Image (tube, rainbow over all chains, first blue to last red; front, side, top):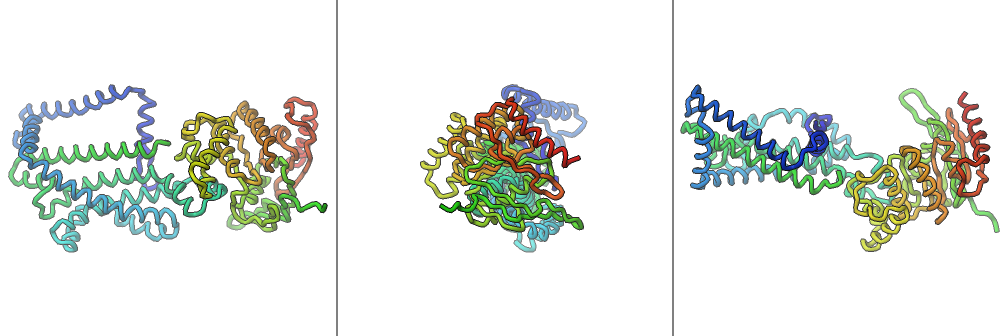
Length: 274
Length: 253
């Protein structure tokens, strides 16, 4: 079970991991084997369905076909190039979103009146999906790189700003009282108490933000691209290469998974005290 | 020599809480003096305003009237008034050592100095070896020791304690009481200790102030004239217990 805040967007994996450990008490090695069983079973199911021959192999290629395309596209460098240009966009958008959303979230979390004024704006903008931003992005930024980064920034912005804001609001008032009686000034209270207590939520926001960045990547690359995983998927569809469509999809999944793992380790390192 | 003013002077202090239409008087024209080095327990049922009184002295609560600490008017929190909270209020993101050193660090002391001081206070409360632990790994009693060390390290002139042992089990609680007295005997810091336990008050205090609610006022102010360390089963303890119980029951009924 995760922790859901008043906006319903925050789930704390730290809590999740702890309850998992408690309820199962499974050693790490066994845990890994259980996880790989799940993946192997999914591949087996896919292999089984494609082997049944109900669907044409050009629509549902077997795992082996996709895997060999995967290897081929790695060997000829195509997949690496597309992945790198997608990663460049995702990170540009993600870091830009952090640069805007973290200070915004801090301000909204610190000042009730600013939050009350801005909250409705955020609540109206938030449900607009990244794909609906495309026309505006093209009108404003053209069909170059900036419109793609704009879409990714837009998508990653909301989870970050909401979690940072929530983290600041969740600071325990007794900690502020204690800091005051120990002689801390406002700036020290902000840095050593408010910000520290918000760090777990800030990291959760970043993880949610990077997920959104990846989710919006394909939408962003629908705009006149000539590189990127979204472009690879689109182009393979036009050429009716279903295996390459799947390679693109799986690569997005794997890269997103890897980045999430990196952020999880960062979370563990930064939040040792939980 | 002319006797100087009391260490703490609470002069005609009134606190009203208002919710929409009702005004509730929590403290009603209260007058109280506390002498330097005194260990005062404030006792009373919930709603008698004992925590509000502490919050006023700590600077958390606005009030009408005057509170003077060594002739200085109290208006906001300050490090000369150390506070121990019932809920420990340790910073979970800091280690024991960092928690105890917090006030010193904030005052701009250099790292080597504040760590050395912090460690000596950690030793004082018997937590040597736990310097690098995070509070989440400590028991309630240990957390409250850290909290005590953190306050004392800041060298306050008065220690304000808001039911600090209320969340502990009975055994730990009794143990903490004697530990607190031992530490208090060492530096004779002025203490204002809020509790709702008659036993705790009689065991700890030089002087007990019983507050009664509606509106919050002083119902009894007595010295506990027993040598320390007190025997919890001493007959003379029962004398005070009867006296205080009579007042609490009499006024509640």
